[in-house]
Length: 93
Image 1 (cartoon, one colour):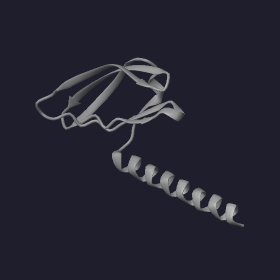
Image 2 (spheres, rainbow, N blue to C red; image 1 turned 90 degrees about the horizontal axis):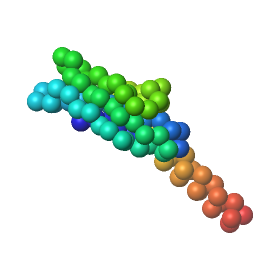
Image 3 (tube, one colour; image 1 turned 120 degrees about the vertical axis):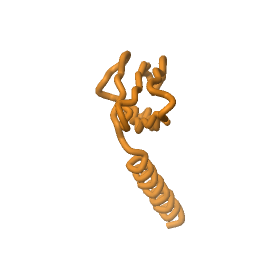
Image 4 (tube, helix red, strand yellow; image 1 turned 180 degrees about the vertical axis):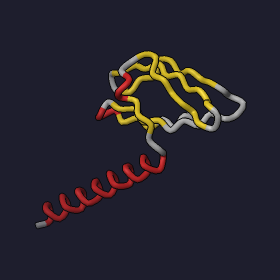
């Protein structure tokens, strides 16, 4: 519904909100990502759900589709797997 995609190491919060018709607005309070605390208000405007950071730094909350998030995670996992293989090969050699 809110599509939270926390990135604590980089102190970022990505969101991809889509409130249902029966919920015109929602406020999340005291959401923590790393050492940062946020209050975020989500509101439907027609077919789009907009958001406003009402507490905390506004520039670290960014809209990003879940598809982009999934692709970024896949690439990170592939890189981690390649690093493990490389380290094992170095231990054997």
